Length: 164
Image (cartoon, rainbow, N blue to C red; front, side):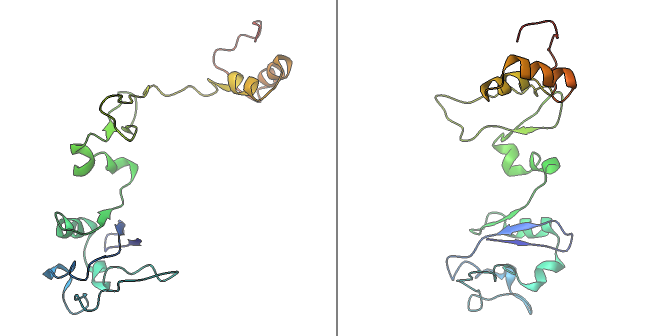
């Protein structure tokens, strides 16, 4: 597996071909492209980059994606968080959940039929679990109260007059 940088500097992940016939199509042939006889099959160690020919830098990532779409090849775009939910593969499988109060977030995997996992999509408040975590860590109520009153930790629902 390697990362390739096409012309537009949007990366692609490229897996190693496992079959010498994998690249027999014309999509990588050319003066600087590979042929089935020149495909490096067993690259190890530090020599893992450069899976695509130098001509890979002459095309944009989306062009390469169109070329490899529906081909038996492990070539996929590396997507950032802002675009991953829009990718056709992720959208058709409903990989992301659209949130009303923020960006889309990934659904839990694996997705099971009999016991599907649906997380609570409400984001936690800063410090929401501070007291609980510190109690589990063995701090006394007095130590936790001192941390809260000094401002070292936050707990949004902390009442200074309450018993912890």
